[in-house]
Length: 211
Image 1: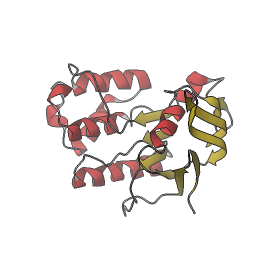
Image 2: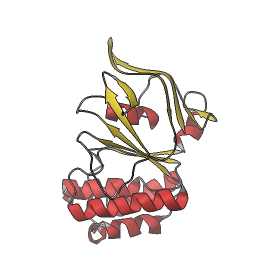
Image 3: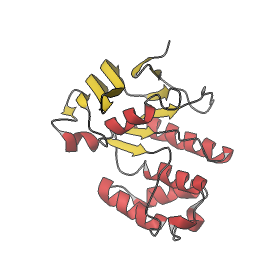
Image 4: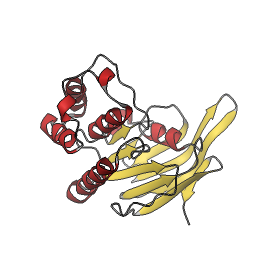
């Protein structure tokens, strides 16, 4: 579970996100909101990528502010529009992520095969389409043994078959390993392949449970 305590993010004097108190229980959690509402900001804060006021606790055990390393070890994150050094190959990125996350290279390779991009595994990512980069990013988000995987707009730019494959991978990771997911969408989300346990809404610079 993730507990938010007086979380606030500002740029200059403008507040872009403010969450006084919020408890997100483990599960498959949908986070919806318009473009620019703060969804990505929230995910980056949880992933430890942005400074902020307040605090977030993991299972009331690890504090992002006081036990930062232990906290972020529990979190994996895939960006909506990932960017990697163009000279690196997918193989090199997989090895790097698996080294950092103590993950299994073969497992990620299997995911890439399911997403039909294993044939470009040894090619630099500069040769990839935006959809291929997206698939690589999603596969890398499953490296290691995270407690939460944050997926920012995971279904944009990829084809219908890959959406179904990603949903299957998410469901298996959730049911078999108990990994929780926080998945964002800027559109009304209707995917019969995923059964969300909770739905959140980012609105008016704050986060609340959808009615």
